[in-house]
Image 1 (cartoon, chains in turn cyan, green):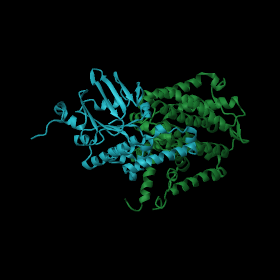
Image 2 (tube, chains in turn brown, red):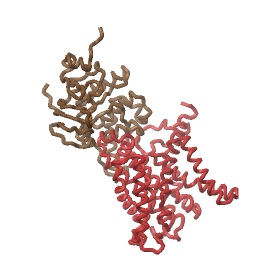
Image 3 (tube, each protein chain N blue to C red):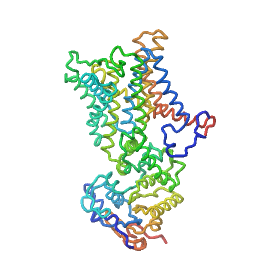
Image 4 (spheres, rainbow over the protein chains, first blue to last red):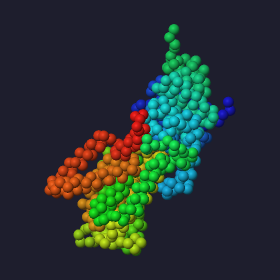
Length: 258
Length: 358
């Protein structure tokens, strides 16, 4: 595999007061791969994602994205660099429809000024239609045509997760961070979600970093896995390597009962 | 099945994203609009102008403004009265310094001045949220009213401390001052309110509205999809204050004609506008109109029934009205906490299916 490195974190340490959430963690994410981050509860997985998208600022360490060292910057600027994410507990805009949620994912690409927006003519309308077409492609892709105009607050959990994925996709970012995309889903919903993740990676070539607790899923779909435990990196490698690592088995995977 | 969307097919995204996608809605709005513009000016009299139409329009404008800030962007403000005062005093200074200036331009410039002041008082919103922000905006309310009382430059050193709107003309017709005909003041306010209601609708359904609503619904998620919080909140403060400033300018130059800041722009006005948007519906342009109409017209209606119809003493009626309005507010909020606009929306959804339940 001769892929370029899209994101690299070097010696990241993050602490909240006396609690050390991350200790000296380094790993990289290659362009076009699906990278899983696993580990027991409280291992620092979500903190790691928060560091990557600029929500937390680590005390030590460097984040390299797209070949450049990224200084501390607010997360809305990180989004403009091309990093999108979903949340562990759904963070949709509940008062808006599915369509509006997806359109808001494209806000970083919209720049029409207030004058034309107020008139809803010329550039404003053109821009709106352009982005609507992109969003409709995503709606087709995720098969959520029927709930286009439904306020997301009324949707069942599984669909909300799908809309949230759609909103992240709408940004057309280079790196997609998924925080437990399958938590709380039944088997069928999980299968759908896996298919969507693989297709996103395949069709759009988007690089994906995901946190997930379903080991079957993780081992099946990810190219490489990094394992965290108590803020430290335990292992890093292909699913097979990680699966047979004794320390990972002790800390997280455990042994099947005889 | 009188009200329905079936048979109303959209073949383009353009058609789908119209302001009123359902044909019946569109025709209804066009009908009401043309009645307001083409028929009402011919039948309007002094009473309807002074106690019904102009106040409803002026307060609807203020409600639109506050709804953009509170209903769409989720930033609670109690500074409305103060911002209306800014609009009023800005229009007073402008129209007395430049007597030739068209009143339309004066009112719009007054809105612009208020927008700037609004942005300054919106700065704390980045750090302060919810009820605490509401308390912080109280500073705007009290400071601004105090300022207009204290600095004589604002009221042109008049002895009473009051400001009086001079007579000003638009296309040769007096619109402000005691000699303005009812139809002229009415048309002036109607034009401004209708134009800006359309602009508000356009802003809220486009890029700005989505950013505002994203901040309102979940500010952290909004930031992570790339919405800059400070810029977005300040733009909401600016637009909202512009609307409130325009409404304050109309309130003074056209409706009252002479004001004294402590009384005309007190804290009760801030609450009045807040009640309007809560009753009408947060995050709804239509709701701003319904809320304003409700709060302005209910007292007038009760007064007409009780004093004019039943012949009860005026002081008794005045107090009864407080009780009744309070009761009605509670009734509507229990029936539909999301306001009259939501009630209307639910009715429309039911109508679409009528006579079947599902």
